[in-house]
Image 1 (cartoon, rainbow, N blue to C red):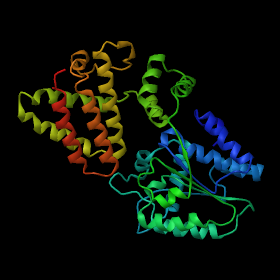
Image 2 (cartoon, one colour):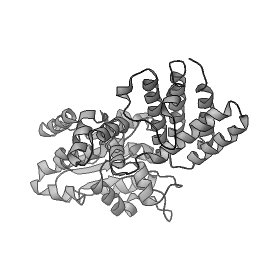
Image 3 (cartoon, rainbow, N blue to C red):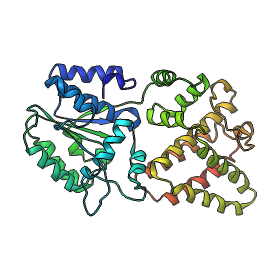
Image 4 (cartoon, rainbow, N blue to C red):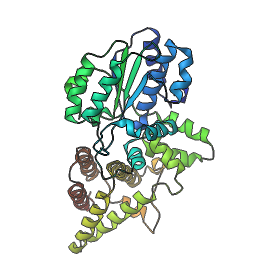
Length: 372
Protein backbone atom coordinates (compact mmCIF):
# COMPACT_ATOMS: atom_id res chain seq x y z
CA UNK A 1 0.00 0.00 0.00
CA UNK A 2 1.53 3.31 -1.11
CA UNK A 3 0.85 6.63 0.59
CA UNK A 4 -0.47 7.97 -2.73
CA UNK A 5 -3.18 5.29 -2.80
CA UNK A 6 -4.65 6.50 0.48
CA UNK A 7 -7.54 8.90 -0.01
CA UNK A 8 -7.07 12.24 1.74
CA UNK A 9 -5.46 12.48 5.20
CA UNK A 10 -2.56 14.52 3.77
CA UNK A 11 -1.44 16.03 7.08
CA UNK A 12 -1.68 12.69 8.90
CA UNK A 13 0.34 10.91 6.21
CA UNK A 14 3.07 13.54 6.47
CA UNK A 15 3.08 13.19 10.25
CA UNK A 16 3.51 9.41 10.04
CA UNK A 17 6.24 9.68 7.40
CA UNK A 18 8.09 12.27 9.49
CA UNK A 19 8.02 9.99 12.53
CA UNK A 20 9.79 7.29 10.49
CA UNK A 21 12.37 9.56 8.88
CA UNK A 22 13.26 11.07 12.26
CA UNK A 23 13.31 7.68 14.05
CA UNK A 24 10.53 8.68 16.45
CA UNK A 25 8.34 5.61 15.98
CA UNK A 26 6.41 4.43 19.00
CA UNK A 27 6.75 0.66 19.46
CA UNK A 28 2.96 0.34 19.76
CA UNK A 29 0.38 2.47 17.99
CA UNK A 30 -3.39 2.30 17.85
CA UNK A 31 -5.13 3.70 14.77
CA UNK A 32 -8.70 4.50 15.81
CA UNK A 33 -11.39 5.15 13.21
CA UNK A 34 -13.90 3.36 11.01
CA UNK A 35 -12.40 0.93 8.52
CA UNK A 36 -13.84 2.99 5.68
CA UNK A 37 -11.84 6.02 6.85
CA UNK A 38 -8.61 4.20 5.98
CA UNK A 39 -7.24 2.82 9.26
CA UNK A 40 -5.91 -0.37 7.66
CA UNK A 41 -4.68 1.42 4.54
CA UNK A 42 -2.66 3.79 6.73
CA UNK A 43 -1.36 0.91 8.87
CA UNK A 44 -0.12 -1.00 5.81
CA UNK A 45 1.50 2.08 4.24
CA UNK A 46 3.16 2.87 7.58
CA UNK A 47 4.51 -0.68 7.88
CA UNK A 48 5.76 -0.59 4.30
CA UNK A 49 7.63 2.65 4.91
CA UNK A 50 9.37 1.21 7.99
CA UNK A 51 10.48 -1.93 6.15
CA UNK A 52 11.39 -0.06 2.95
CA UNK A 53 13.66 2.27 4.90
CA UNK A 54 15.57 -0.76 6.19
CA UNK A 55 15.60 -2.59 2.85
CA UNK A 56 14.59 -0.93 -0.41
CA UNK A 57 13.86 -4.31 -2.02
CA UNK A 58 11.17 -5.16 0.55
CA UNK A 59 8.52 -2.91 -1.02
CA UNK A 60 7.12 -5.42 -3.50
CA UNK A 61 6.89 -8.09 -0.80
CA UNK A 62 4.85 -5.76 1.42
CA UNK A 63 2.68 -4.76 -1.53
CA UNK A 64 1.70 -8.42 -1.94
CA UNK A 65 1.42 -8.96 1.83
CA UNK A 66 3.97 -11.77 1.76
CA UNK A 67 6.87 -10.14 3.63
CA UNK A 68 8.10 -12.69 6.19
CA UNK A 69 8.60 -10.04 8.88
CA UNK A 70 5.14 -8.51 8.47
CA UNK A 71 2.48 -10.40 10.43
CA UNK A 72 -1.28 -9.95 10.60
CA UNK A 73 -3.85 -10.86 13.21
CA UNK A 74 -7.59 -10.44 12.79
CA UNK A 75 -10.91 -11.72 14.17
CA UNK A 76 -12.16 -15.14 13.05
CA UNK A 77 -14.63 -17.76 14.17
CA UNK A 78 -13.41 -21.00 15.70
CA UNK A 79 -13.10 -23.68 13.05
CA UNK A 80 -12.47 -27.22 14.32
CA UNK A 81 -11.78 -25.66 17.74
CA UNK A 82 -8.96 -23.63 16.18
CA UNK A 83 -9.11 -19.90 16.83
CA UNK A 84 -6.03 -18.97 14.77
CA UNK A 85 -6.31 -16.30 12.09
CA UNK A 86 -3.66 -18.08 9.96
CA UNK A 87 -6.25 -20.58 8.73
CA UNK A 88 -8.06 -17.72 6.98
CA UNK A 89 -5.03 -15.67 5.94
CA UNK A 90 -5.44 -16.32 2.19
CA UNK A 91 -8.99 -14.95 2.29
CA UNK A 92 -7.92 -11.99 4.42
CA UNK A 93 -4.97 -11.22 2.16
CA UNK A 94 -7.17 -11.30 -0.94
CA UNK A 95 -9.73 -8.99 0.68
CA UNK A 96 -7.15 -6.43 1.80
CA UNK A 97 -5.32 -6.43 -1.54
CA UNK A 98 -8.62 -5.82 -3.31
CA UNK A 99 -9.93 -3.24 -0.85
CA UNK A 100 -7.95 -2.16 2.25
CA UNK A 101 -11.02 -0.13 3.29
CA UNK A 102 -13.02 -3.34 3.86
CA UNK A 103 -15.02 -3.60 7.07
CA UNK A 104 -16.41 -6.29 9.33
CA UNK A 105 -19.49 -6.76 7.14
CA UNK A 106 -17.26 -7.55 4.15
CA UNK A 107 -15.19 -9.99 6.22
CA UNK A 108 -18.32 -11.70 7.52
CA UNK A 109 -19.58 -12.12 3.97
CA UNK A 110 -16.30 -13.67 2.79
CA UNK A 111 -16.25 -16.12 5.70
CA UNK A 112 -20.01 -16.73 5.36
CA UNK A 113 -20.12 -16.26 9.11
CA UNK A 114 -23.09 -13.94 9.67
CA UNK A 115 -24.38 -16.07 12.53
CA UNK A 116 -20.96 -16.72 14.07
CA UNK A 117 -19.12 -14.62 16.63
CA UNK A 118 -15.88 -13.27 15.21
CA UNK A 119 -13.19 -12.66 17.80
CA UNK A 120 -9.45 -12.68 18.43
CA UNK A 121 -8.86 -15.63 20.76
CA UNK A 122 -6.18 -16.38 23.32
CA UNK A 123 -4.54 -19.06 21.15
CA UNK A 124 -3.93 -16.32 18.58
CA UNK A 125 -1.91 -14.40 21.16
CA UNK A 126 0.04 -17.57 21.99
CA UNK A 127 0.88 -17.88 18.30
CA UNK A 128 1.99 -14.25 18.16
CA UNK A 129 4.35 -14.84 21.09
CA UNK A 130 5.87 -17.84 19.27
CA UNK A 131 6.36 -15.95 16.01
CA UNK A 132 7.98 -12.93 17.61
CA UNK A 133 10.28 -15.02 19.78
CA UNK A 134 12.09 -15.94 16.55
CA UNK A 135 14.66 -13.73 14.88
CA UNK A 136 13.74 -11.48 12.00
CA UNK A 137 14.00 -13.27 8.64
CA UNK A 138 15.57 -10.27 6.90
CA UNK A 139 17.59 -9.05 9.84
CA UNK A 140 15.60 -5.88 10.45
CA UNK A 141 12.36 -5.01 12.21
CA UNK A 142 9.35 -7.24 12.72
CA UNK A 143 5.90 -5.72 12.48
CA UNK A 144 2.55 -6.94 13.77
CA UNK A 145 -0.68 -5.42 12.45
CA UNK A 146 -3.79 -6.35 14.42
CA UNK A 147 -6.93 -5.53 12.45
CA UNK A 148 -9.99 -4.81 14.63
CA UNK A 149 -8.07 -5.16 17.88
CA UNK A 150 -11.24 -4.14 19.74
CA UNK A 151 -12.58 -7.63 19.01
CA UNK A 152 -10.09 -9.38 21.29
CA UNK A 153 -11.91 -11.35 23.93
CA UNK A 154 -10.99 -10.70 27.57
CA UNK A 155 -8.61 -13.64 27.95
CA UNK A 156 -6.77 -12.72 24.74
CA UNK A 157 -6.57 -9.04 25.68
CA UNK A 158 -5.03 -9.82 29.06
CA UNK A 159 -2.37 -12.04 27.50
CA UNK A 160 -1.72 -9.54 24.71
CA UNK A 161 -1.07 -6.88 27.34
CA UNK A 162 2.01 -8.79 28.49
CA UNK A 163 3.29 -8.93 24.89
CA UNK A 164 2.64 -5.20 24.57
CA UNK A 165 4.51 -4.39 27.78
CA UNK A 166 7.64 -6.38 26.88
CA UNK A 167 7.82 -6.72 23.10
CA UNK A 168 10.85 -8.41 21.51
CA UNK A 169 13.64 -6.15 20.26
CA UNK A 170 13.01 -4.28 16.98
CA UNK A 171 9.29 -5.03 17.07
CA UNK A 172 6.58 -2.59 16.02
CA UNK A 173 2.94 -3.18 16.85
CA UNK A 174 0.14 -1.43 14.94
CA UNK A 175 -3.42 -1.94 16.15
CA UNK A 176 -6.54 -0.75 14.37
CA UNK A 177 -9.97 -0.35 15.95
CA UNK A 178 -13.20 1.44 15.14
CA UNK A 179 -13.64 2.36 18.81
CA UNK A 180 -11.72 2.12 22.08
CA UNK A 181 -14.88 1.46 24.12
CA UNK A 182 -14.28 -2.29 24.34
CA UNK A 183 -10.53 -2.26 24.88
CA UNK A 184 -8.67 -2.66 28.15
CA UNK A 185 -7.60 0.70 29.61
CA UNK A 186 -4.19 -0.85 30.29
CA UNK A 187 -3.76 -1.60 26.58
CA UNK A 188 -4.79 1.93 25.66
CA UNK A 189 -2.31 3.39 28.13
CA UNK A 190 0.54 1.48 26.49
CA UNK A 191 -0.15 2.57 22.92
CA UNK A 192 0.22 5.83 21.08
CA UNK A 193 -3.33 6.55 19.90
CA UNK A 194 -3.69 8.00 16.42
CA UNK A 195 -7.19 9.26 15.66
CA UNK A 196 -8.20 8.61 12.04
CA UNK A 197 -10.93 11.10 11.07
CA UNK A 198 -13.46 10.69 8.29
CA UNK A 199 -12.24 11.50 4.79
CA UNK A 200 -12.90 15.09 3.77
CA UNK A 201 -15.77 15.66 1.36
CA UNK A 202 -13.55 17.28 -1.26
CA UNK A 203 -11.18 14.29 -1.23
CA UNK A 204 -14.05 11.84 -1.64
CA UNK A 205 -15.54 13.93 -4.42
CA UNK A 206 -12.18 14.12 -6.19
CA UNK A 207 -11.60 10.36 -6.19
CA UNK A 208 -15.18 9.72 -7.35
CA UNK A 209 -14.73 12.09 -10.27
CA UNK A 210 -11.48 10.32 -11.20
CA UNK A 211 -13.44 7.07 -11.44
CA UNK A 212 -15.36 8.64 -14.32
CA UNK A 213 -18.93 8.10 -15.57
CA UNK A 214 -20.35 9.64 -12.38
CA UNK A 215 -22.58 12.68 -12.71
CA UNK A 216 -22.01 15.66 -10.44
CA UNK A 217 -25.43 15.07 -8.86
CA UNK A 218 -24.64 11.42 -8.15
CA UNK A 219 -21.21 12.39 -6.82
CA UNK A 220 -22.80 14.87 -4.42
CA UNK A 221 -25.29 12.26 -3.25
CA UNK A 222 -22.58 9.67 -2.60
CA UNK A 223 -20.32 12.18 -0.82
CA UNK A 224 -23.10 13.34 1.51
CA UNK A 225 -24.38 9.88 2.27
CA UNK A 226 -20.97 8.19 2.65
CA UNK A 227 -20.08 10.56 5.51
CA UNK A 228 -16.36 10.35 4.83
CA UNK A 229 -16.36 6.56 4.47
CA UNK A 230 -14.73 5.33 1.25
CA UNK A 231 -15.99 1.76 1.73
CA UNK A 232 -19.57 3.04 1.82
CA UNK A 233 -18.90 5.31 -1.16
CA UNK A 234 -17.54 2.40 -3.22
CA UNK A 235 -20.60 0.29 -2.52
CA UNK A 236 -22.89 3.14 -3.53
CA UNK A 237 -20.81 3.75 -6.65
CA UNK A 238 -21.00 0.12 -7.77
CA UNK A 239 -24.63 -0.37 -6.85
CA UNK A 240 -27.02 0.34 -9.71
CA UNK A 241 -29.93 0.51 -7.33
CA UNK A 242 -28.15 2.56 -4.63
CA UNK A 243 -29.89 2.11 -1.29
CA UNK A 244 -33.09 0.64 -2.69
CA UNK A 245 -33.40 -1.91 0.11
CA UNK A 246 -32.96 0.75 2.78
CA UNK A 247 -35.39 2.99 0.92
CA UNK A 248 -37.95 0.19 0.77
CA UNK A 249 -37.77 -0.45 4.53
CA UNK A 250 -37.85 3.25 5.35
CA UNK A 251 -41.00 3.71 3.22
CA UNK A 252 -42.60 0.68 4.85
CA UNK A 253 -42.00 2.06 8.33
CA UNK A 254 -43.35 5.54 7.42
CA UNK A 255 -46.55 4.09 5.98
CA UNK A 256 -47.14 1.82 8.97
CA UNK A 257 -46.36 4.71 11.35
CA UNK A 258 -49.04 6.90 9.81
CA UNK A 259 -51.58 4.07 9.90
CA UNK A 260 -50.98 3.06 13.50
CA UNK A 261 -52.36 6.31 14.95
CA UNK A 262 -55.85 5.58 13.64
CA UNK A 263 -55.62 1.80 13.57
CA UNK A 264 -53.60 0.33 16.48
CA UNK A 265 -53.75 -3.09 14.84
CA UNK A 266 -51.05 -1.85 12.45
CA UNK A 267 -48.67 -1.96 15.42
CA UNK A 268 -48.04 -5.63 14.69
CA UNK A 269 -46.72 -4.64 11.26
CA UNK A 270 -44.12 -2.41 12.92
CA UNK A 271 -43.12 -5.32 15.16
CA UNK A 272 -42.70 -7.52 12.07
CA UNK A 273 -40.75 -4.72 10.37
CA UNK A 274 -38.36 -4.61 13.32
CA UNK A 275 -37.90 -8.39 13.38
CA UNK A 276 -37.07 -8.40 9.69
CA UNK A 277 -34.32 -5.79 10.10
CA UNK A 278 -33.06 -7.56 13.23
CA UNK A 279 -32.17 -10.56 11.03
CA UNK A 280 -29.55 -8.50 9.16
CA UNK A 281 -25.93 -8.55 10.27
CA UNK A 282 -24.87 -5.79 12.67
CA UNK A 283 -22.95 -3.71 10.14
CA UNK A 284 -25.96 -3.57 7.84
CA UNK A 285 -28.26 -2.59 10.71
CA UNK A 286 -25.90 0.23 11.71
CA UNK A 287 -25.76 1.42 8.11
CA UNK A 288 -29.55 1.49 7.95
CA UNK A 289 -29.65 3.63 11.09
CA UNK A 290 -27.28 6.10 9.41
CA UNK A 291 -29.55 6.10 6.36
CA UNK A 292 -32.67 6.78 8.47
CA UNK A 293 -30.93 9.57 10.35
CA UNK A 294 -29.87 11.23 7.11
CA UNK A 295 -33.35 10.98 5.56
CA UNK A 296 -34.91 12.64 8.62
CA UNK A 297 -32.36 15.48 8.40
CA UNK A 298 -33.07 15.96 4.71
CA UNK A 299 -36.81 15.98 5.39
CA UNK A 300 -36.28 18.71 7.99
CA UNK A 301 -34.33 20.80 5.48
CA UNK A 302 -37.09 20.27 2.92
CA UNK A 303 -39.76 21.34 5.40
CA UNK A 304 -37.85 24.50 6.31
CA UNK A 305 -37.42 25.56 2.68
CA UNK A 306 -33.74 24.65 2.21
CA UNK A 307 -34.45 22.68 -0.92
CA UNK A 308 -31.02 23.35 -2.46
CA UNK A 309 -29.41 21.38 0.39
CA UNK A 310 -31.66 18.36 -0.15
CA UNK A 311 -29.42 16.23 -2.37
CA UNK A 312 -31.67 13.16 -2.20
CA UNK A 313 -35.42 12.62 -2.02
CA UNK A 314 -37.47 9.45 -1.77
CA UNK A 315 -39.87 9.43 -4.69
CA UNK A 316 -40.20 5.73 -5.52
CA UNK A 317 -43.24 3.51 -5.05
CA UNK A 318 -45.54 6.52 -4.96
CA UNK A 319 -43.90 7.93 -1.82
CA UNK A 320 -44.88 11.57 -1.28
CA UNK A 321 -41.67 13.17 -0.07
CA UNK A 322 -43.07 16.68 0.32
CA UNK A 323 -46.02 15.47 2.39
CA UNK A 324 -43.77 13.36 4.61
CA UNK A 325 -41.33 16.25 5.14
CA UNK A 326 -44.05 18.43 6.64
CA UNK A 327 -44.18 16.04 9.60
CA UNK A 328 -40.48 16.53 10.43
CA UNK A 329 -39.88 19.76 12.33
CA UNK A 330 -38.15 21.39 15.27
CA UNK A 331 -40.54 19.86 17.80
CA UNK A 332 -39.66 16.25 16.99
CA UNK A 333 -36.36 16.06 15.08
CA UNK A 334 -34.20 16.10 18.23
CA UNK A 335 -36.14 13.26 19.84
CA UNK A 336 -36.08 11.25 16.60
CA UNK A 337 -32.32 11.56 16.20
CA UNK A 338 -31.75 10.79 19.88
CA UNK A 339 -33.72 7.54 19.54
CA UNK A 340 -31.70 6.55 16.48
CA UNK A 341 -28.49 7.35 18.34
CA UNK A 342 -29.67 5.27 21.30
CA UNK A 343 -30.42 2.33 18.98
CA UNK A 344 -26.94 2.67 17.49
CA UNK A 345 -25.43 2.62 20.99
CA UNK A 346 -27.25 -0.57 22.00
CA UNK A 347 -26.52 -2.33 18.70
CA UNK A 348 -22.80 -1.59 19.09
CA UNK A 349 -22.98 -3.24 22.53
CA UNK A 350 -24.71 -6.34 21.15
CA UNK A 351 -28.13 -5.66 22.62
CA UNK A 352 -31.18 -7.74 21.69
CA UNK A 353 -31.78 -6.63 18.10
CA UNK A 354 -35.48 -7.55 18.01
CA UNK A 355 -36.18 -5.45 21.10
CA UNK A 356 -34.04 -2.54 19.83
CA UNK A 357 -35.79 -2.32 16.46
CA UNK A 358 -39.29 -2.88 17.84
CA UNK A 359 -38.73 -0.17 20.44
CA UNK A 360 -37.33 2.21 17.83
CA UNK A 361 -40.16 1.61 15.37
CA UNK A 362 -42.85 2.26 17.99
CA UNK A 363 -41.19 5.35 19.49
CA UNK A 364 -40.58 6.96 16.11
CA UNK A 365 -44.22 6.33 15.24
CA UNK A 366 -45.18 8.46 18.24
CA UNK A 367 -42.74 11.26 17.47
CA UNK A 368 -43.75 11.58 13.84
CA UNK A 369 -47.27 12.52 14.90
CA UNK A 370 -46.09 15.23 17.27
CA UNK A 371 -47.40 18.61 16.22
CA UNK A 372 -45.04 21.56 15.67
